[in-house]
Image (tube, rainbow, N blue to C red):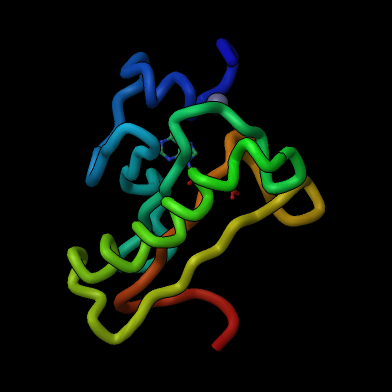
Length: 112
Ligand code: 5GP
Ligand code: ZN
């Protein structure tokens, strides 16, 4: 996806504040943090949103869900954390490369 912002971040064409990387996912700091800790986790293989998932994505989605709590603990969020996945324009999605927001610490927004 040559015009995808997050694919450009994966390729290194756009800089990011990288926190974690493995063969399947990249995690970096959100450029406009909504809480003390605000990371974005993205699959390295482009998929636009939850709406586009197929069985081929099952392994990477499971990997994301299992990696998020490890990252949260590494960020010092021992008490817990919030994950948000916006899907589609109606869900507030702005960047159409699937991403999980990982939020925690002070100023945690929404759903209190
Ligand atoms: P969405 O609303 O699509 O769920 O969230 C997109 C997120 O990407 C927003 O929280 C926004 O701050 C973040 N974002 C947009 N552009 C960039 C960028 O170039 N770099 C980083 N690190 N985050 C970005
Ligand atoms: Zn992409």
